[in-house]
Image 1 (cartoon, one colour):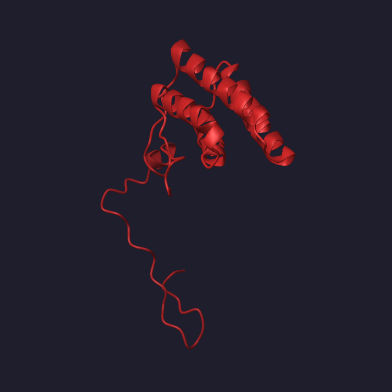
Image 2 (image 1 turned 90 degrees about the vertical axis):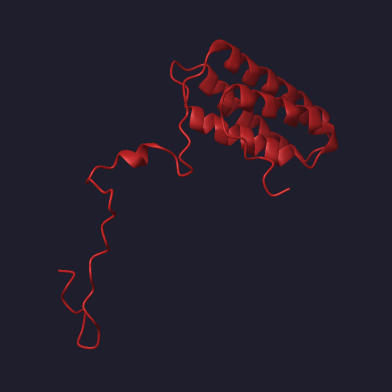
Length: 135
């Protein structure tokens, strides 16, 4: 199929080259794109995340922040809290939400402590911190 010309003016299309280490398995797909592997969390890690979310919620509700942005952040906080209360929390999802929350707040001076609490919780949980990239 790949060696047939597409039309009378085109050259034959070759199949993409196989990788030297390609064994036909798709095991590499289990890791995220940046090859980071999330591990399960213990009680101290989930407590640190919960405390960071409390700090964020306090900062968000006490700041002069547009209501729609407040609602979006509260929704993200609720999503992380919901994961914390499941038997098998989706750590990758929590990592994405925590970094997103901190990224949304990083320009607000009054939210500095909340961002640092998120950074500390992310570190304790062994998650990658991406919210400061691009500063």
